[in-house]
Amino acid sequence: MTKLVKHNNIQQLMHGLSISVAKELRDSLKNKNFVSLSVPGGTTPAPFFDLLCKESLDWSRVRILLSDERYVPETNNRSNTTLVKRHLMQSNAAKAQLIRFYSPDQTEDEFVRQSVAYMNTFMPIDVSVLGMGLDMHTASLFPDSAELADALSTSDSLYVVRPASQPEARITLSGRVLAQAVKTYILIIGQEKLAAYNLAMSKTSAMLAPIRTVFGNQTKVFWADIDN
Picture 1 (cartoon, rainbow, N blue to C red):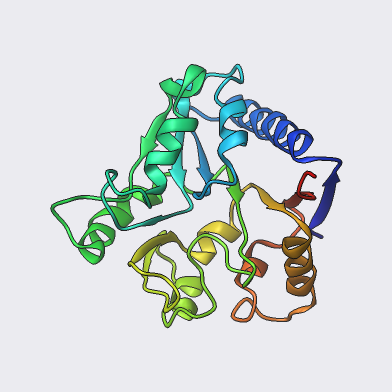
Picture 2: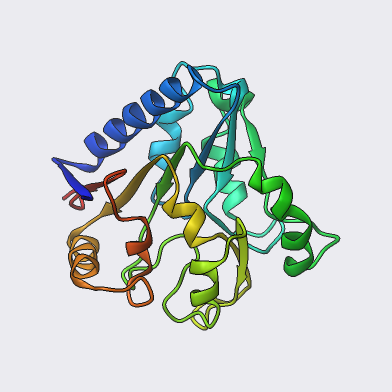
């Protein structure tokens, strides 16, 4: 059963999430040579990244990848990779390996075809941190994407989607890959996101609420209201 963990404020949420993710990574490193951490894009997780990068663990054995990426170069201000480099690949975490989802010499479809086999070596994801939109999407699994059904069901690790609501193509981790993560944390802030989460809980299909694909005993939702 997915567990909702409410925090008193955003600072407490970010601190608690950082501690929890770092502990999961340390525990995984006890049994594996390398571990994988997937993280969301956008600006919301930046304070969490700023804290997590300072945690003490063997970052040289951690592979960091985004749950999804807009297929744009890192010079584009919509690049999630740039945000991760600026906030997470710092301090102790500078020793981690960052897996990029973009190549200037390939289309998004060519990139995915070439990268799927390599990405499969990272699976299952040891720790997955996700966001959620008001439309109940997660990663780039958007309800208005014509590719949603395939992106949810494919056995491949990566999938290209072109949601009608978004200005560019995106590469996303597939629904199956996200669902199979060993530990999952969903980061949401504010009453509107809490209402969207509760609505997703009432739905019966990931096609209606894609976030449902990661609901389960391995998942915790970390929530705080917007600070006044």
